[in-house]
Length: 243
Image 1 (spheres, rainbow, N blue to C red):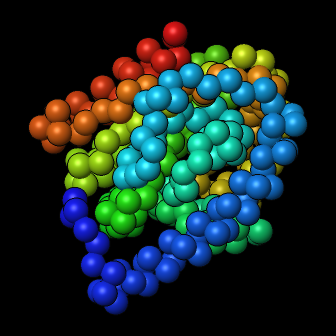
Image 2: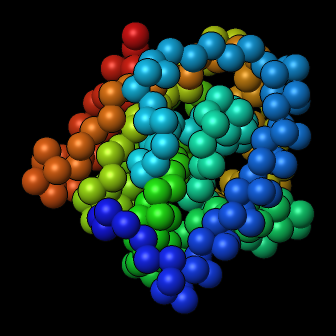
């Protein structure tokens, strides 16, 4: 990862301006979400001393609820550049807002991986923070809130190895929650199992949670082994969930 960014480069200058615009949208989003989340949800954080004061780093979290991005965005002061399933860009209003906040849309397959590595690396090289749910939507749409974490996709590890950015593990652990039906956008249904064609899924709605941060992992320790980094991250998150 380069030590300095050449802002005189035209492409880099455009990216920096886009970062500033997306940061402004993100601040508005946080300002709107803060009273909503804090008014309805009790959040306790541990391990905040593990969180770098600034980027670059890759935040990796479990994904139990559609509230997870809001919870983490309100807990952390960083501009989190969320990695989001590509079909979400088609969702009215939400897609528009997420695009303006600078999310990284990822489609399935190799094309999506190339997009993640290209855009994610650019964000990290400019000192930003990329936030990823490595379970994707597998846990949320699995229908069993008591199940263990779903298998991790390796995109975050590939991005960490390519850029050298540390991986910051975090676990959102429910203290009190209830299941609520959440509508599934029509644009998303074709990407999900047929049983979700009815248009909604029961997802945990938090009332009280613990947000637990672990010590960052250095992608260089595993000598570039993606599977080793995925396994180490998962093990650390399991430990956080069990503390």
